[in-house]
Image (cartoon, rainbow, N blue to C red; front, side, top):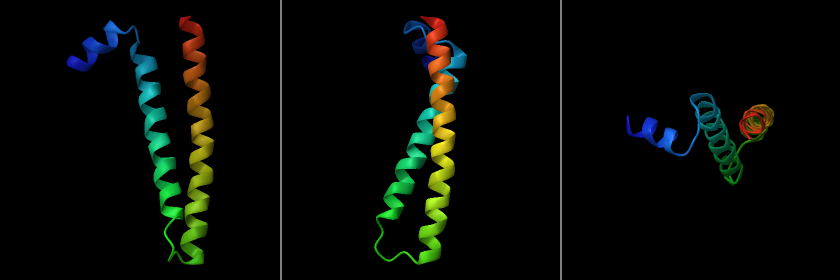
Length: 76
């Protein structure tokens, strides 16, 4: 209930909050994949898997970013 009150206080509707939450989740996923790439003892297969997942995650990040930007533009 506190989060809902805070959302109303700062003027963020449920749609924008949801999109921002998804954007945050995807950003955290990208950071975790980048950190995984720093592991020195990765096999080539592990490295390729992480890079593939990173590529997909970056695509999702672009989509989420565009959606958030569109909603923000509509609220201005």
